Length: 66
Ligand SMILES: [Zn+2]
Image (cartoon, rainbow, N blue to C red):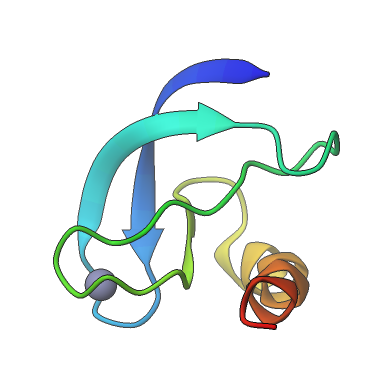
């Protein structure tokens, strides 16, 4: 499901960028979008609680890298 434009942050290089947000595998998570600067997939939407978000998205990043 398309959720509109969201600001993402890249956890590899710290770049912030806007990209279209989609549900990740029909969950409450937003699918990571590739960083336009370094092409890393270790990205997540900004905002909310950063340490908590990193812990949750770590699983998605690991699933994506397989
Ligand atoms: Zn990056």
